[in-house]
Length: 211
Image: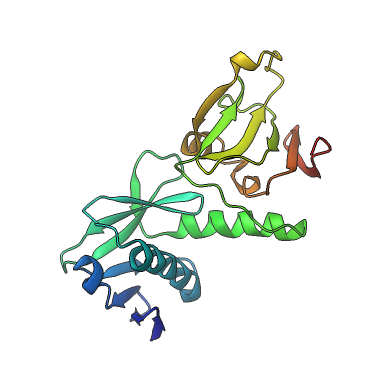
C-alpha cells in the first residue's frame, strides 16, 4: 500500500490498483486495470488523478474525460460503484479499459526529450495546433514549437503542401493531430524553441535558429 496526499493506493491481486479515501472528495474510489506495464507506471497515473481531484476538487460524473498529459482518459462507473479508468484507443474511435496507451505515449515523449537533454513540455488534448494542408494526409512534416498562451500548444506543423499563405493554415485541436498522426506524437513534448524535421520518415530534432 502507498499513501499519497492522504489517499491510499492498493494493488489488488496484481490485477488492478484501487484508491481508498478519494470517496471523501468524489463519493467514489478510482480503479485502474494492470495490463502490460509495471505497477509503478499505473501508480503514476493514479497519482496524477489524485492531484487533479484533491487540488481542483472537481465534480466527477460517468463518462467524464480527463487529459493525462498528451492522452485522454475517461471515468466509467463499474458494478462496485468505483470509477474504472478507460482511455481513448489509438485512432480515437472509442475507449478501452485501462491506460496502457497513455502510459506508452508519455514514456515515449519523455524518452525523446531526455535523449536530447530536454525537459518535456507535454501538450494536452484541450490545446490547439496550427497545421498546413498535407498533415492529415500523412506527408512529411516540419514542426516548430513557439512560446504560446496556455490554450495553445505552440506547435506549427507544416508540409510541402504549404503555399506560404498564412491564411491557408488551420488551427485544430491537439487530439485531431494525435489521432491522425501517431507517427509524430512522441515528438510533440519537445519544448518551446525547438523543431523537428521529418524527411522520408526519418526525424531530426533541432534548436530553432529563429528563437
